[in-house]
Length: 425
Image 1: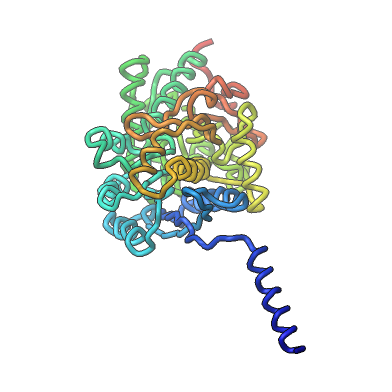
Image 2: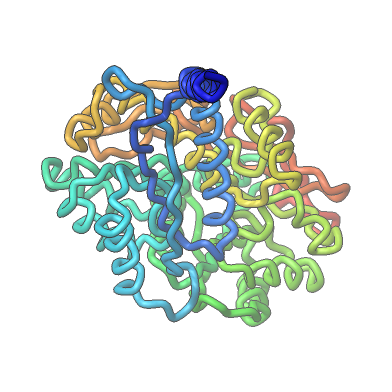
């Protein structure tokens, strides 16, 4: 009798544990994150995705029909930020995570536009929703517009090169108006997005703003000496030098510009200079640079837009270090919520239904208000209350980053380095 009594108690105890435990019997929703893990943009975007996933799972997961399901992240290194890695290798990795891991969506995605554009056909073949957050070529939108049915699962949340052109061109307009600078020299990395951005800014500046292009240089990925280009810019009396680089070595460009006191304002995008850690890495010798943050929240707090500042602070609190990538983390974080909300509205993981709901997105994110255009590109503009937004800021001589554009969130005005003078009084 005593034995039966003990067994009954044991069974009641086990039943109680089963009833009290959270019920996550359903399989998790798999989010594939194939990207360049060794790049700072890829590395921090993965963290941002995991951060959003944790937040959603802490609240019980994503409602799919009548059941709640947790999110689970599956990471794959495409290596496409590294010099010499062929596009075919990145494509192999992209298809592998879809066919072998059976992911329900792809977030972040390829680093290089060359990989993204070719990878769109793999996405179309397997019909897996893609929310790209790094590669920037405007050809992405062109492909979607040319065949919207085939590419209906392809979306991009990050800034595209076209919008970056707009930000940089308007900054050049400001430099002309404020200081009388009309002579431009362009220095770009030999990759699709950087060349497209340089060409786009040049076209707008020379055809619509009365700015003269006095020269340009293109550098292979991995180049580390920019002195000859800087000297050419000096000899041609360039008043603004526009660098567009995402490789780690491009930080040397700024050091050379500063040490040689080149009399042309450096204004563009140098990836290693975006985060707060650049001040220490480059020994405080970066004051004066005008740089770009592609999306609000990515490695920069924004005083006049609290959601971006909250994300920036929450990231540092969670990981113990500040964000350093000015491109990728913020839209990657938002992309998890875009996907999760689309699944809940669809009530299903059916990729066609989810893609239809992603297209209808209208939410306030850390990058601003998020809506997609006809090319499945998030719309970027000048006011985060109306659209998503990036920003242009200047490093000060005491190690601060002051946002100077767009006006809706500007915190100060451009200040010239002590060795440089305005062309007009």
